[in-house]
Structures are given as structure tokens and as C-alpha cells.
Image 1 (cartoon, rainbow over the protein chains, first blue to last red):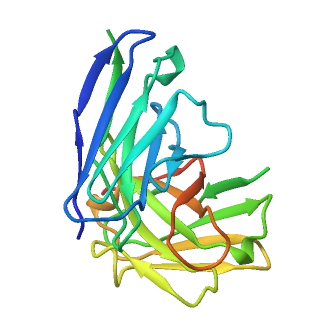
Image 2: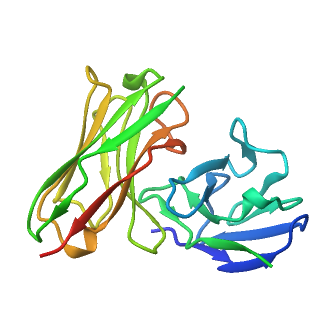
Length: 107
Length: 122
């Protein structure tokens, strides 16, 4: 199975900060990498597919990059509604696997 | 507008069975692969099962293979998850998920349902 490792597991940031979350796959997954946002008690929301493509309606302050085994989710200017937990997920190979999540909290 | 609405979650005893349903609308159901993903209380996301767009191919996580069965009713635009021999560790919110691209291929989630809670406890 492909293991997905996210870092950090949590971070504190202020409104307007630039935030970067990393995701590393235990083996190369080309660009079959997705990012999701989840708020407490809610379903996940799809943000990015194919490592760098934004789903419809996702604000442009979100961006994704990387290929192979190392990936990054960046929020260019953190907004109040961005405080949430973020998960990466590989869909190159079954079983589909998720990272452990990164909780973004208010500083 | 795409909508996914899960139902069927409940409190069930260990060893029991439950069938979850995910009623969909807003897209051509028969053309898309569908999946179930779960989240134990306070934990991360875990993929459970996928059924291909052609409905011939199914995949399961090792933790549920042989106990869970995914299926669809294209006439009702609904995907199901039959769960047998339930264990305490199956306790979770179960989300259904829709593939982004029509047809069979790599499955990446575009839409999520709101989830339904399954609690396995005596």
C-alpha cells in the first residue's frame, strides 16, 4: 500500500498568512494526488485534483504543486473560512490512501 | 446541482448487519464510478470501496473485504453498501463519493455526501 505522510500535523496561523502543507507518498504517484478540506462535523470538500488543478468554485488563493512523491498545498493569504483540516489522497493505486491530515488553527 | 444523500446509519450490535444507501441526483449516475469513504470518530479518512462506472468492477479495503458489498441500482440512481459481520472498529461516519470523470479510470472524488453514522456497540 502507498503510505501518505502529511506535515505538519497541525499549525497555527493568522489571517493573511501564507500557509504551506506538504504531503509525501511512500512511492511515486505521478500526479494522481488530491487535496480536501474538512470542517468539524462536515463532509470533506474537494479542493484540488491531479496535484495542481482546482475544482470549480475553489478560491484561487489555494494552489497545489508537485509530482512523483512530494506535493504541496499552499494557501496564499489565509482567510477566516480556511481554518479547517486538510487531507491529501493518492488515487494512483488501490487501496486509495489518505494522509493523516493537517489541522490549521487560528493563532 | 449534484447531490448525494446517504441514509441507513444506525446503532447495531457486533456481528450484525446494516445496509447504507446513497441517493444521487444532478448527474448521469450510470456513467460514473462511486465510492464509500469512512471516518472513525476523531480520526482521518479511510477509503472503503469503489464500484466502477460499468458496474462490473468493485474494489475493497482489506479491512472490509469479504464482509462489505458495494452495489448500485441505476434505475434508482443509488449506490449501496451492505455491511455484514460488523465490528466495533467499523464505527464511523460513512460518506459516499462521486468520481470526477465519467467512465472508468482513476478515481478522484469530486463530490461528497453529508455522511451517515454507523455505531457498532453492544
